[in-house]
Length: 126
Image 1: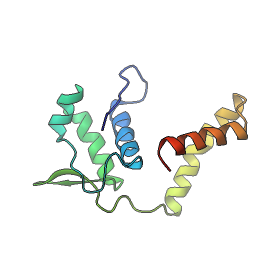
Image 2: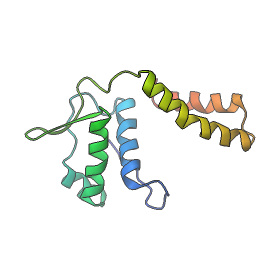
Image 3: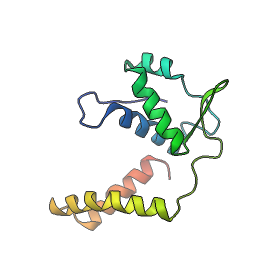
Image 4: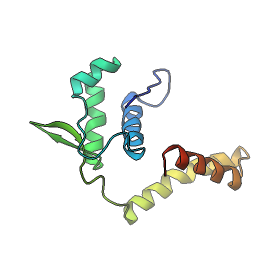
């Protein structure tokens, strides 16, 4: 899997890394049970601090995307993250609401937003 990070972005590197891994899982570029590079190896490969990689891995573990084993290392969770429950759906709603409000303020209408979402679903192979 290719990881693309923008070192000039206002989005923190650990968050970009976390997002890239989630996208890789969604696109099935990373499969359940697949091993990921160690914290040190990935940090070295992409030229970032190992604490940054560790933070991304720990958050992905907490969110159910990864398992971290002492012997096997870091692997994509074999069962994947838990299915969306009401708590997750409410969090997603609260995350999307200001983004959609901002888009509306910038005169992006519902049709254009739906078209963007369709494009993203297509990019992810869904």
